Length: 434
Ligand code: GDP
Ligand code: IMO
Ligand code: MG
Image: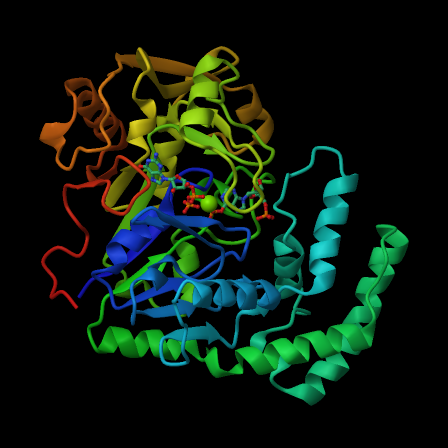
C-alpha cells in the first residue's frame, strides 16, 4: 500500500501540478486537501497546457478518481467553469469518478468582495489572490460558513443566508464602503450551484477510507506551500489554510498512519507571489534570468513572481515541519546558462548568523543571506532522462542540495512536460501498480 502526500516546500508554485500528474498514472485517486482556487497547478502533456485551480491534477489520466476534501474552500462558480473547460478538452468528470466533500466550505460572493476591498485599503497588504480564501476560512472558524451540505437543504440554507447576509452587507457597506449583495440573487445562484453539483457531493472521508481499505493508492495533492501555511508559514504573509502535512489529516478525515510517503516539491531556486519577507530575492540580471526563463508569472493571477536563489534555511525548515521522506527537485533547467549558482546556507541577522527560520517577520525581513556558490553549466538539460546525462556541475548542484537538505531527490524535473523528468526513486516503488 502506498499513500503519498505531495507538498510544496517553499512559497507555492514549486511545480506540484507536474509532479502530481506524473505520479497519478500509478495512483487510483488524487485528493486535494486544502486551499481553494488561489491554487494554480500547471500540467503540460504533449505540448498542451492545462491549469487546474480546484480539480486535482490527476484528472488528465482517464478513469482515475478525483476528490475535493473537506479542508477546501470551494467557489462553486469557478469549479463549474473548470469542469466545463475540462469537458471541452474531452475530460468528463462523472459522479463515479469525481467527489466533493459535503463538509467542504463554500466561497460566497461577499468573501471575494471582502478580500479585494481589504487588499485595496490596507497598508502592508498580504497581496492575496483576491479569490475570497481568507474570509471564507475566517467564517469556517467563526462557525458561520456555508458547507456543501447546507446548500442541499433548501429550508435551512434560506434561513441561515438571511441572517448572515445582513451581517456581511453591514460590514461591506459601513466598514469597507463597498456595495452589499441582494438576498434573492445569492439564494438563487447558490441553489442553482447546489443543484448542478449535487451528483458529486458526498461523504468523501468515507470514500477515502474505502479506497484505503481496498489497498488502493492515493495521492494527496497539496496546494500552496509550507511557507504559506497558516501556522508554520511566514505569518501574516501566508494563506489561511493548513498547506503543510497536517492539513491532509484535517482536510480529508484520515489518520496519520494512512500516509506512507511525504514528497516535498522544491524548485531549484525560489519564487514568491504577493507580499512578505523573502531573504534570497534578487533584483538583478540573475533575478531577471530566473523570471524570464522560468516564465515566472502566477498561474492564477498572472502576477510576476518574485525570484531568488535556493534557500536551504527555508528548505530545511520545511523538511522538518512535514517530515518529508523524499524530495522532487523542479525547474533545474532554468539554471542553465548561469556562470555561478548561489545557495543560501544561513541568514545574517544583526551580528549573528542563524540557520533556523525566525518566526518573527520583522527579523526575517532583516535577514541577509549567507551564500555558498558552485559553478554553473551551459548545456541544455531538457533531454536528460538520467543523472548520467546531466552535466557534471548540475549533478554537483543536486548532490550539494541533498547534503544540505539531508534527504535524497527521488525526482528531478528538467522541463514542464510530463516526460521531461529524471526518476531516481518513485514513491510508489515496490507496490502493486494499479
Ligand atoms: P504549482 O502551483 O506548484 O503546481 O506550480 P505552477 O503550475 O503554479 O508553476 C510551475 C510552473 O513551472 C508551471 O508553468 C509548470 O509548467 C512549470 N514547470 C514545472 N516543472 C518544470 C521544470 O522542471 N522546468 C520548467 N522549465 N518548467 C517547469
Ligand atoms: P499554488 O497551489 C503561490 C499566496 C498569495 C498571497 C498569499 C495569500 O499554485 O502553489 P490567498 O489568496 O491565499 O489569501 O493569498 O498566498 N498564494 C500563493 N502563492 N502559489 C499558490 O498556490 C498560492 N496560493 C496563495 O499570492 O501571497
Ligand atoms: Mg501554482
